[in-house]
Length: 81
Figure 1: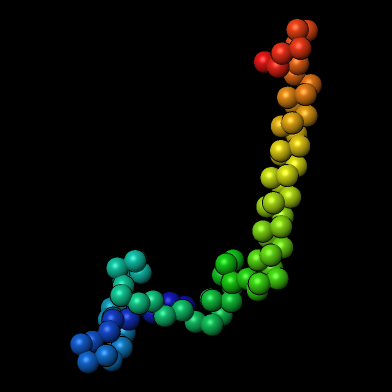
Figure 2: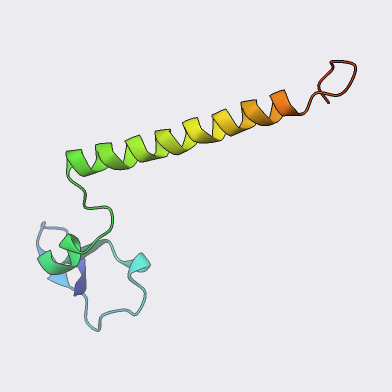
C-alpha cells in the first residue's frame, strides 16, 4: 500500500486527501514494508553480485560467439567479410 504525503512548512508530514491515482505528482510516497520487500530491486549485496556475474557471463559467451563467427566467416582469399 502506498500513501502520498506532503511536507508542511514547519516540517510536519501529512497524508494528501484524497489520495491521487498517480503517485508521480506526490512530494513523497510512503510504502509499506510488505510492498518494499516485494520489489524486484530489493536485493542483498550477494544477490546483486550474482546478477552482475550472470550478466558478465552472458556478455562473455556472446563475445566468444562473435569471435567464432568471424573466424568461420573467412572467404577464399583469406580476408574476412
